[in-house]
Structures are given as C-alpha cells and as structure tokens.
Image 1 (cartoon, rainbow, N blue to C red):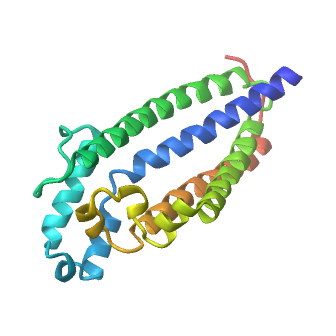
Image 2: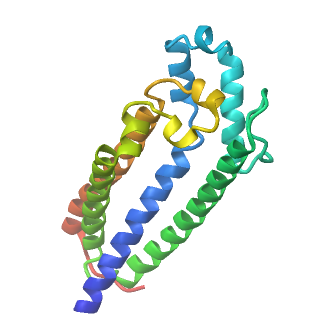
Length: 210
C-alpha cells in the first residue's frame, strides 16, 4: 500500500510540474498584454517608438526565445550583448520547459495506467491540491522576495534588465504583473479542474483490466 501511495504522490508531483511547464509554454508566445498596455498607456509619446515598432521588437525577442530566429537582441535598434545573452538563456529555459512538459505528460499517463486498478482518481485530487498549493507558494514568494516584488508588482524592470535601458523603457507598467497574474490563474484553474475531475471519476470508478 505504501508503494501505491508513493507512486500516486510521485505522479501528482509530475502532473504539477507539467502544468507549471505548460503555463510557461503558453505565456511566452502571448503578445496581447504587451500590445494592449503599450497603446493604452500611450507610450509612443514617451519612448519615441511607435506601437508598431515596439511590437515588432517585442515579437522579435519572443521569436528568438521560441527558437524561430537567431539570437540578435532587439529587431530595429542596436542592443547590448547582455540582452542577447539573456534571450539565449530564456531560449534554453523555454526548450527545457518543452522537454519537461512532454516527459511529464508521458510519465503521468504511464503512472495512471499502472494505477488503473488502484483508485487512480486519487492522483487527480493530489495533483489538484499540489498544483494549487504551489501556485499560492509562487504568489507568496513574489510578494516576499524583494527583487521579484519590485519586478512584478512595481514594474521595476531594471531589477533583471538593468543593462538594457532601451528595453526597460519600452516595457509598459504592469506588464509583468498581468503576465504573472495570468500564469498563476492558469495554474490555479487547472488545479481546480483536477479536483472536479476527481469528484466525477470517484463516482463513476469501475476497476478494469486492459
């Protein structure tokens, strides 16, 4: 019984890691928040860069992180080598997230197949609790750790991008906050969905063999 419990906990943790990785994969390509805030805050008058050019630079950096373009930094203006190095590191993180998410899904499916006759739906409950708990932990860390708090809640982007004042200058206020909020909301929502699936699966559970 202990081995079954440990396996359920392991699969639940793998599910949580997969959800976190999936949130990162979904958030990075999103440009809507940036485009909306740049226009709403009328940053063109302050930065001297049109909304079209700013979006072009932002999209160019995203494409580099996704691995669709070579690492060059900004698209229409000269940028420092430090920015290119940061983008390269973000690209590596993104690629790792893809592998982690893919492997996590495979391990989760394999674990659920093994547990098919051992009340496998318990994994959904554990996965939901762990996922929601981890999202709350991330929120707490963001509020308590000063660099993250300044970066996310106070739009002090120079905390992590201080060597690129041009890039910092074209990032709208609350851009990091809304992106962070969207990511946490996604993770928390998936946790709730797992809990609801657990309730439905428990009622209709019928052990079977392949």
